[in-house]
Image 1 (cartoon, rainbow, N blue to C red):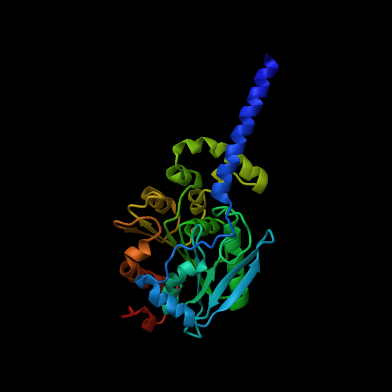
Image 2: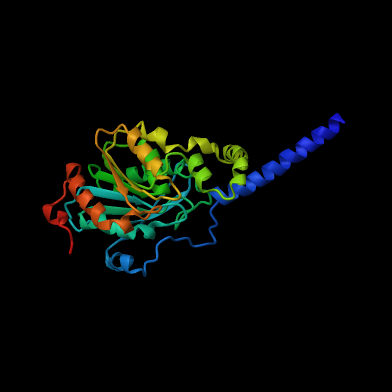
Amino acid sequence: MEHLWLYILLIVIVIYLFFSFIVYLRIFRIDRSKKYKVVNQDDPFFQESYAWFQKVPKEQISIKSYDNVRLNGVFIPSIDETSTNMAIVVHGYKAFSEDMIIIAKLYSDLGFKVMLIDLRAHGASEGKLSSFGYYEKFDIKKWIQYSLRTYGSTDRILLHGVSMGAASIIQASGLNLPSNVRYIVADSGYSSLIKMLRNITTPKSLIIFFPGVSLITYIAHRFFIESIHPLKQIKKSKIPIMIIHGEDDEVVPFSMGKSLYDNSKSPYKEFYPVKDCLHGVGYIKDKEGIDFKLRQVLPNFFIIKKTFLKPKK
């Protein structure tokens, strides 16, 4: 009888781990046979920036990550040949660099050099695993080092990310980044991956498999889900930051954005709420307001010519 219970327990554990593995694949593994994108460049809102991107001078760039994953991106030189400003722009989950073209144009119009990067397992970069910022934070640090080595060792750097991109740059800010990093714009970033997953997982019964998923990620990739925690990292950083968050965000609750702001140790921080706004679309909802705010704030940290600060008609 005792052996029977052991067999039953073993079968239950195997079944639990099997379904945990299915959930793990659903969350962390990216199907590279699919071409993910979140922006329709034919939409009138994006047409102008996409047309700009087709014509603007640019070059393909590439680095190797600390764990030997090939990462790719696009570099756009500044319209001001004397510029010492660089914006590194980071997309979200199951998106890719070109989804951030409209943000690249925002900074290019301000005279910045721009790097549009593809996170690991996205776009033109290699890899099949998205770690939601755990490994990506180190990738971002390497992109920063590449930028300083290639385009100017004294450049002032801005990091702008949306959703997972925002969470990744916040996690990177907790590392020992070069002092060249002067400002962060984090749009719709989560404060805790596990809490965000609990919020969006359907059916909710799948949450019971999260401990199993976390065990799998640790065995396979050396991290627990719980260790992906931007809130802990933002407490380590004093880099000036602007947090943008939609008040009706259905993926990353508005309270997460507010919590990131409240726990930031930066002596200069801004919180920009966007009314009637869902996840990751704050710039679509309030482009004029965000553009105005950035034109107000950025001259405090970057040398920007007055001609670039005038709103484009």
